[in-house]
Structure formats: C-alpha cells, structure tokens
Length: 394
Ligand code: LMR
Image 1 (tube, rainbow, N blue to C red):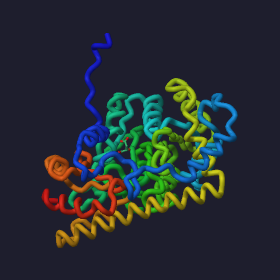
Image 2 (image 1 turned 180 degrees about the vertical axis):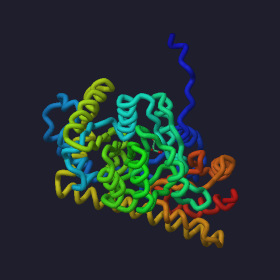
Image 3 (image 1 turned 90 degrees about the vertical axis):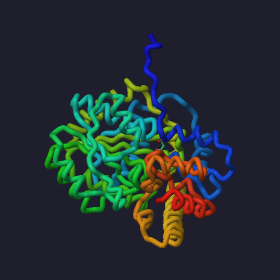
Image 4 (image 1 turned 60 degrees about the vertical axis):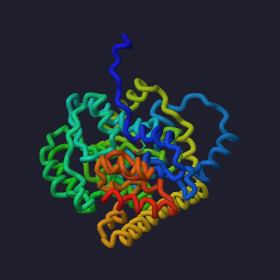
C-alpha cells in the first residue's frame, strides 16, 4: 500500500541547495538557506563549542539515556538564557527537542492535544515550514497582515485589525526576533498591543525564537519573548540553538510551556514529557550538553558571547554596506530598510520573475519570495549584488 503515497513538493528553501550545487558558475552567490557564513564563506564551529566538545570527550563516561524531558541542567540553562529572571521558574514546563523545528512541531502537537480544532494565526508571511508542519498536522493556519511590502516594515494597524478575529483558544504564532522571512519585527508599542489583543481575545501566543543574539543582542532579542511570558497567562516558546551556537546538525532545541501557576505547570510538564516519549522517546543530548557546558562555564560563556556578538556585528555591517552601495548606485534611499531589518533575513521585494532573473542572469540565489540571507554575503559580493538588484529593476 505504500505505492499509494502522494508525491510531496520539495521545500522551496532546501531545493535551492540542490540548484546551487548544480551551478558551475564560479561567481555564484548563495543567499538562500539560513546558515551563517563568515567572510570566507565557511560556517565555522564556534570556539566555545569546540572547547566544550574537547572537554566532553575527556569527561563523558556514559552514553546511557538522559531523562525523558531532557537533561534538567540544559532545560534550566536555556530557561535562564531565554527568560532571564523575569518569569518565575515555577511557571515553566520544558522539554528538550531535536532542533527548533522539533520544538515547533511538538508545540503544535501540544495545541492539538489541548484543543483539537484550535486554529493557529500566522504572520503573512512566515517561515514556509511553519505552514507545512501545520498542514501536515491538519491544523488550520490563518494568516494575518504583518509585513507591508511598501514600507518594508510591520503593518501594525493591519495586524491588530486582523487579530481582532481571534477566538478564545486560538493560538498566535510569533517570531520572537529577527522575523523569518521578512527581517521586520514589531516595535515595542506593537509588541505591547499584541499582548493586549491576545489577552483580550483569550488567545495563546506561540513564540518561535530561532535567532536570539542575531538581532540587537542576547537580552534585547529576548525582550519581546520575556514581555509576553510575563504578560500572558499561558505561552509556548519554541527555541533553537542551531544558529546562535552554530550547531545546526546537532539538532538542539527546547519547547517551554509557561503556565499561570505551579499546578498547571505540572500538568503541562506531563503532557510535554508524554509528547517526547511518543515521538522519539529520549531527546538528543550531545548538542544540549555542549550548550549547557558553554552557558554554565563563565569563561566559555564569555567567549561564546564575544563570538556571537562578532557575528551579529558583521551582519549589521553587511546590511549597512549593502544599503550604502545601493543608495550610491541608485541615487535613492529606497533600500534604507535593509538597515532597519534585523537578523539574517530581509525581503527585498523581488517578484518571482526577478528572483529567476537574478539566478539565471547573475548567479544570485535567494528564496522565491525574495528573501535574502544577509549572512550568506561577503564584502566582495556587494558590488555584484548591487548591480544585479538594480539591473532587474529593484
Ligand atoms: C531557513 O529559514 O533558511 C532556515 O531556518 C533553514 C531551514 O531549515 O529552512
């Protein structure tokens, strides 16, 4: 009966990797998949992670199972990294997950367990895999206005007008910082209004936090998540260590459920632990252990923060340099939005036809919706990208 399986369409982001590999042009530029690259085009292992790996190899004397929700030290270190001291520990249930995607998937499953038929409101647009996972689980995704292509910023009025349609028990999927794919985040007032509307309508926020440290800094990037966790009775947070610890293939993430009191926390913890057991039993531990070692050792942590800050600063200067090159070449300031966006991504307003031309005529690869990965750029490629963007009419 397996011949009955329907063919699946390839993920648009991952398809780019294959297309790029088949392109023999030496000057090709990869602005596709969201992976950080340094000036030489490498995605290096962070120094602190390498040091932790060395220590772990020396010290680890068993590979027996950890606990079903994940190593408590990891869950605790991540809770503190993400929530600081703003949210009482007694409110937080958590599981380790295989990557941020695993956390997102488990979070959606939890919503479905709690309330079959719950809808998930999603920013228009959002990470394509959010929509794909929701569709796979049979959960209705309801897009709400978010990004205004004319201003390249968040359409706060449109967003709030659409969220007035929320019903009690619906969920709202938000990006904690560095919105993927647009690069545009709400301003503090926008976040406050979001908290108000979700509370007024009885909706549950689900926050995807995959880029903490890539926008304005480790604490600044968690500020909106902390405000929501503080201001709403029940919140889900799906966080990833792939980018900020550079451990993509280790699949290291966490799902937290913030509840209003310790009794409900215990109930949520039971459901989360059950989800781990029925999905894959014990979660992967290697990446989680490295993250814990880095966060709990003052010297490793300081080095990690310094390296992460260097990555963040480099992305910001690539943004500034690209915006400046475009301003000079075009004689206009219409590309200033690049410096207002945060994180790895910006949506540059390219139509599908322009995306195709950029690839076919200029060997520049980006996602079909015109998303570029700033961290895929380097200083040498900025003139070529500038010429190409103007050549296709951006
Ligand atoms: C991206 O958006 O490019 C990354 O999150 C990688 C992925 O898995 O899609």
